[in-house]
Amino acid sequence: MSPRLRRLLIAAFLCIMTYGSRAAPVSVWIALSDMGGVYAEAAEALRTEVERVYPGRIEWRIASAAQLRQTRSEPQWVVAVGGSAQRAMQEHFAEDPTPPPLLVMLVPRLAFERLADPGRVRAGQVSAVYLDQPPARQLMLAQLAFPGLRSLGILLGAESRGQAASFEKAAREQGIRLNIQVVAGDGLFGALQSLLPEVDVLLATPDPAVFNSQTVANILAAAYRRRIPMIGFSPAYTRAGALLSLYSTPTQVGTRAGEMLRQALPGLALPPPQWPREFVVGVNQDVSRSLELNLVEAQLAQQLRQKERP
Figure 1 (cartoon, one colour):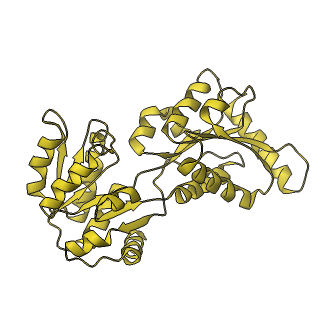
Figure 2: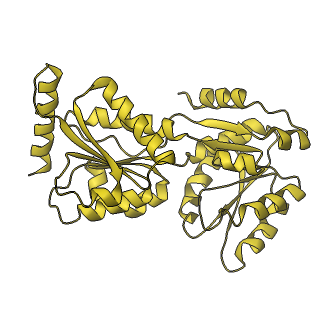
Figure 3: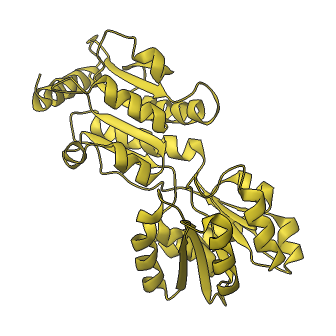
């Protein structure tokens, strides 16, 4: 079945369903990287958003990617939640000449792009709502929290160094001096020793080779000794000692993915891959007080939303 014919059939199904027919529902798989937790939360938010417009008209199959790979039937749409689910679904349909459209969520941009077929992305057959935040938004938050900011430091690894150009572009547009250190031969300790004396604020990025459960405590301790605050990318970082964190909740990501899916269900192309629209700003008040700062989560989030408005 050609992609064009597939889209026409889906459009016909939805048009008929809209007018109350008993036509067969549209089949949608939601493949989870792991059962429960943030993956299930994002999946439920997506389903809720789609059901708001097409109540009872979608046949949902929500299971782990491993379970779905054992299924013989073929869905009309696939949603992958997390990186391992994206990989599993792409492998599952690799031999299919007309694989179903694939929407990915809760995957960092670089990880998504490393796995996705660029041709299918351009055709609107593969898309995503990224897990991470756009560089411009992260730098705007740094400026709002630290109006006298002179230099912002970023540690990148082999996986995340591809983000350097995006951060540099955003920094030029916002008038921020950026200091990027790539963790390479000297390792994490050497990169930190070079970076911290040169910056006012440290921005963490979701590169597991640099920021992970084994390294984050040492990075935070080294930064705190120099009274350099860190901006993290999840609530766990705020709890661990980062002054700020900027992130989107699984529900926020899932809701946006649900909006994208329901836009495409009538047979249209998926919207292009994109950053999450909604976000949360977290503040560690203990660290804020120790640094003699007075930061208010809701106020920072509102100011950030206002700066992003066209």
